[in-house]
Length: 99
Image 1 (spheres, rainbow, N blue to C red):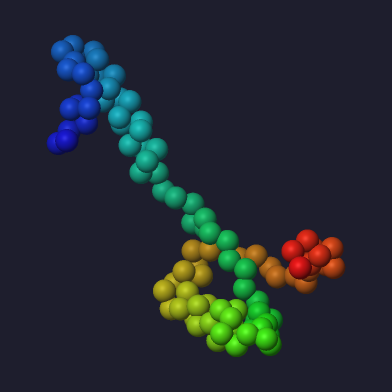
Image 2: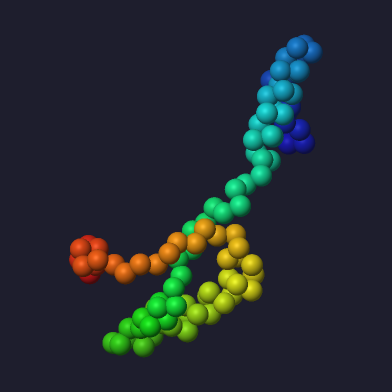
């Protein structure tokens, strides 16, 4: 398609064309509106580097991996685009929900 008009039945009145143009202007204004500055949440704490799997040294949850990912996010400027959550220790009840 080369034009949005090709998706619609042929319109031959100026009034209908004006209404469609107004509708498209409203749609485009919504689509092109600025996005909020922070739309992704990030939870990071240095204590995460203390976590490792003692039974499986190939497990992906390794301090080096967590550190490298966070460092790369810093290099790319992604941290400035995130909402930062503050880490807090889990309660026993929370831990029992998944372990």
